[in-house]
Structure formats: structure tokens, C-alpha cells
Length: 145
Image (cartoon, rainbow, N blue to C red; front, side):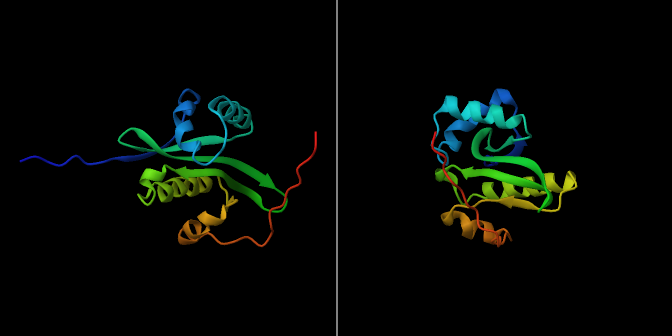
């Protein structure tokens, strides 16, 4: 009797040596070339930014970028900067598993919330995961050089 191959989803932090392996999936979210991606991750890592991967049978299919933050307005919280699952496997549960990892990590650090900025097409996903729209709008101003 043969047993069908069981697919294994693993969620774990990536080491700096593995960051480049996350680029093909992250490129589906961020318009950066690989060198700029690695430079930004390296720079952000100095202030606590980490990359977490969802690996299916050892292949990266999802990437989460997160960082611990402490502000006067929100207190200690985890901020999810990036979340992307390869378009070929969306709906597989990898995004949910990455967010569960972030929430568990935040609790372990004594944080009481997870914040993120969502693209309009991703709001429904976050709402299914019990996230709520935040009352404070996110705003920006592009500064000329």
C-alpha cells in the first residue's frame, strides 16, 4: 500500500542568508529589484524588521515582513509591513498561517495588538481573520528632493 505524499507547510523566520530566496514571492507585492529589496531588508533589520516565510515542502510560497513598535498612541504592538502569498497558491491557508505566526509572536513579546496597512483588495482577507478597519486614516506626503 502506498501513502500519498503529504504536503508540509512550515512557518519560520528567515536568516539573512535566506532573504534572497524570499525575493521572487515578495516581488509580487513590491516593485523592487532584488538588490534594492535586500538593501532595504538589511537596513530595516537594524530596527527589528524580520522576514517570516511560509514554506510548502521546503519552497517559499508566502512572505511576511514584521517589526516590533512602541508608540505613545498605540503602546507596544507588532506592525506587519508586508504580507504576500504566491499567486499560484493563494487560498491555500499560507496567509492565515503567517498571520497566526505574527499574532503568536506579538503575544510572546507582551504586545496587545497587531497593526498593518492593507491594500484595498486585501481588506476582505484581513476581515476574515478578525481584523478591523482602524479609525485613523493613513496619510503621506511625498517630499521633493
